[in-house]
Amino acid sequence: MSTGVMLQALAGTFTATGSMTTARQFQTATRLDDGAALITGGNNGSGVVLASAELYDPASGTFTATGTMTTPRELQTATLLANGTVLITGGISGPGAVLASAELYEPASGTFTSTGNMTTPRSAQTATLLTNGTVLITGGDNGMAVLASAELYDPATGTFTTTASMTPPGSSRKPPCSLTAPSSSPAATTALPSWRRQSCTPPLQWFPRSAPLKDHLEAEPRSRSAAAASPGPHR
Image 1 (cartoon, helix red, strand yellow):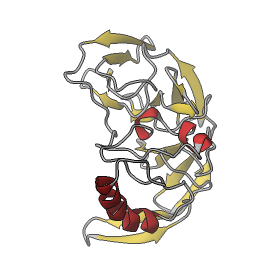
Image 2 (cartoon, rainbow, N blue to C red):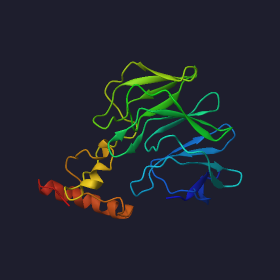
Image 3 (spheres, rainbow, N blue to C red):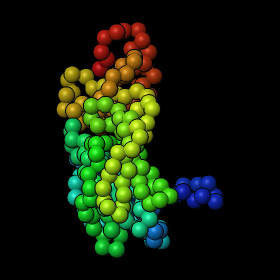
Image 4 (cartoon, rainbow, N blue to C red):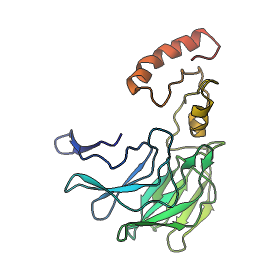
């Protein structure tokens, strides 16, 4: 979706605001020093991973396009650094393509430039600014497995170095159970990150990207009951 919603914190209510320039899911949203919000990447809902970015202006309630990332990304991180730039790390650029690359957004020029690569490709990881100005990158998924490793980004050198691993492995956005597409939908399966292709116990019914969310929510309890009654795959 491209629509935006604002939270009125004092009133505890949400109100509609301007729409994004591009429909997105799995994008990032990072508040900049000037109060604007940087929106990066994501997926357009049709399997296309986006490199575009845009800025939200709270004063006008509008979104405007800004520079394009050096690489299309979804499930990446975007962290505001102490110097006002934004560090973008990892994510997925396409089916099976988990990224180790990283880049920096410069608000003054509205441009993205490459920086050092992470030591490990990651998607759905976390990125946290520490008090010394470095960024801690933890966990995520490398397309094959959930990761326990972690690393640090040093803005002064533009490099990543390994640090102690987590115990046990973790992913910031990995659900306890993921949907598995039937064999009749191989393209839909390969277009998903590995943590969304993992089997559930019991297996859940597959819903294509185009299925309305309400259909998913209404059918999931039925699929769980059917799965418990039959060991075979469900479509």
